[in-house]
Image 1 (cartoon, rainbow, N blue to C red):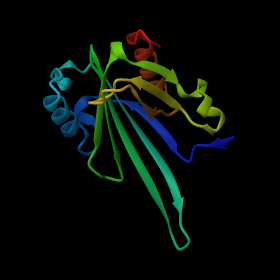
Image 2 (image 1 turned 120 degrees about the vertical axis):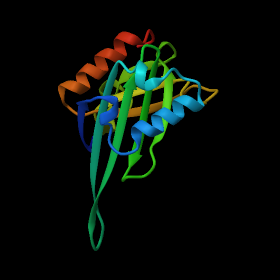
Image 3 (image 1 turned 30 degrees about the vertical axis):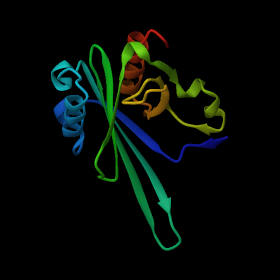
Length: 155
């Protein structure tokens, strides 16, 4: 079994405390897609920082992915940004998605990692699709999992 190349840490935070441009990207996405005022509706916010050391022949560098997560009464919205790039945002209606702890998935046997698999209609996709949200070992990550499982009927 391979271990994930990422080291992850997850924290609970406020919407205004998101790193970089995540809050702005989430607001714009919500406005464009007709979601509620995500910031006002945010009941829970979390952020995971995933780092991976990349070793090259002449030098090594660190890849950092920041995932900012918002849970509203009806939606899960998250933005992911790699190395200070513009965040990519996705959203899903909580009642329409299936949540699986990654550690219980078949993929875990191939690559050990921690997080949740989200499947169902994501973003603008007409067909069901899937996404992975990496999580650290902290209590905040356990709280996020608990909230997701309690809010999704398909878990």
